[in-house]
Length: 84
Image 1 (tube, helix red, strand yellow):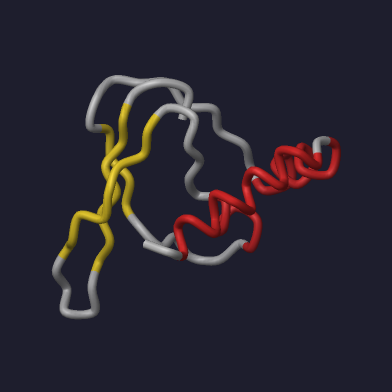
Image 2: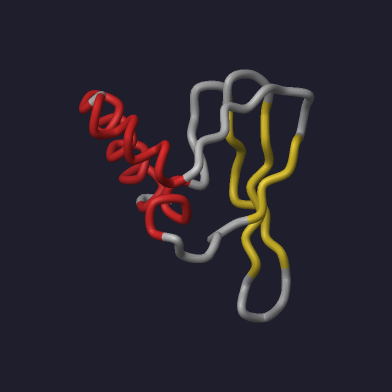
């Protein structure tokens, strides 16, 4: 997310939607599904106007191979998501 704020909502097995936090400028989202081709784990919606940078899985892999520091940052971000 380049600028703005996004809301995160996860669906529970009971069928209810539960707020799960926000995404702020500088944060990433959707990387797991993009890299693995797996299903999305949450629904993201705009809380404010903003700007996004979108990469498909192949482009993301290329960026991560060319820029290891970005890969390290992404891994730290994924670790924070797991701790929620």
